[in-house]
Every structure is written in structure tokens, then in C-alpha cells.
Length: 149
Image 1 (cartoon, rainbow, N blue to C red):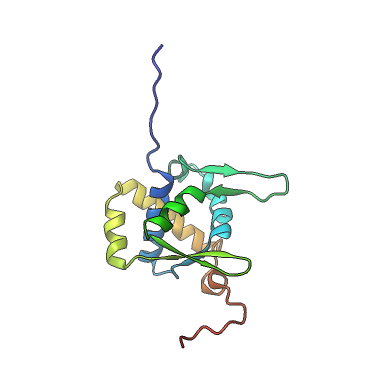
Image 2 (cartoon, helix red, strand yellow; image 1 turned 45 degrees about the horizontal axis):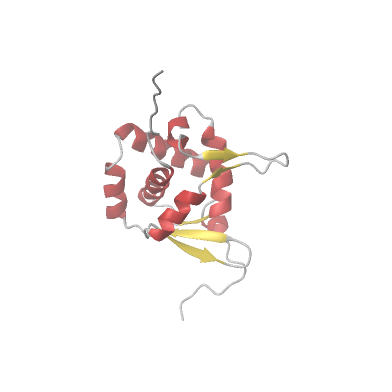
């Protein structure tokens, strides 16, 4: 009996690297709430156009409807390797993307063209549908002073 195995076309960290690079190239705000992002990406998990992007990512479902994709390991790697920085306030864990546009372009060029095109479409749909809302919700400044001292 011969057992065949294959690795996913893109790892969970690769997904996050391509996703964050695409956000930068789209000119979007480079801050996202981790939990909300994982919930928003759940809607794309079973979409046949994007399914291969999620091959290495588990989806979590609950009776209460709190469904999400699990990017926990990928997020930890991203923090360790400097792709993301963590911002934590009393109730939310947010991430800041630490990429310049040039670095984002290099990252995207390291993926296959069909992967980059699909991620571009996913990010476009995500922002168009306001699944991940633009700056007002992404940053969620709860009456805090945002200017530098």
C-alpha cells in the first residue's frame, strides 16, 4: 500500500504574508483586529475561488454562530518574525502590518501568479463588502488621544 501525501499550496503563514502584503499594495489601513479578521475570512473559506488559499488553515464552527478561521499559529509566527506588531487594549488584540510598499511587492512576487491574483480578489471583495471595515472600525479609537506627544 502506497501512501501519498502533499503539502498545501500555501501555508497558513504564507497566507498571512500574502494577505498583509496585498493589503499594503491596496493602500488600506495596515491595522486589523485579529478576532474580527478571522471571523470575516470565514465567509471566504468554502468559496471555490479561494479554497486553495485556506488549505493549511482550520475553520472553527460553533453552535452560537461564532465561526472563524484559525490563524493563531500564523499570527504568532508573524509577530516572531516581525511581519506584524501587536497592539492590545482592554478588550481587543490588533495587529499592525510592518511592511513598506516595496517589501510588500517583493513578498507578493515570491508567490505564484494565480495565488497573488486570488488573494488580490479576496482582499478586494473583503473590503468592498465591508467585512473588514475601513479605518473607523479597524482602529476603534475609544475616545483616546491619537496625537503624538
